[in-house]
Image (cartoon, rainbow, N blue to C red):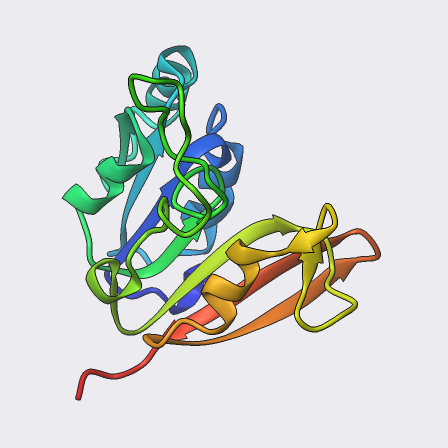
Length: 171
């Protein structure tokens, strides 16, 4: 997928880790593609910056996943830690986390027309509507039914699936 991103790739959250996921993306990306990764852990962000210190097309931002918005739009956006619509936003002052869907990246703003978003860490759906922990899986439905995307769930292993969506062309 990185090979098909001619200008920009973005990545959020724990996928940066210490740079392993980002290294996979960078190794597959065309030579002119810039890569932006946001890591919410200061120590991991520092390690990842050190790993990529000699790679001028790679930028590591420290902070909340929403910082990825600073560098978009992207040809490929990998939502590994934040922006997945799984209620993964920062807690407010009362300790409440946003409901699924409220913490979702906006493909209309963050993807180029025809750009691809990848949302990982789903268990494969076996019913429709999909369910997770006994309740409707709002995050999965958010992406599969998103009006700006054509999306599908891909099973990678018996217990692992991703959703891949392509932003529709602007009309």
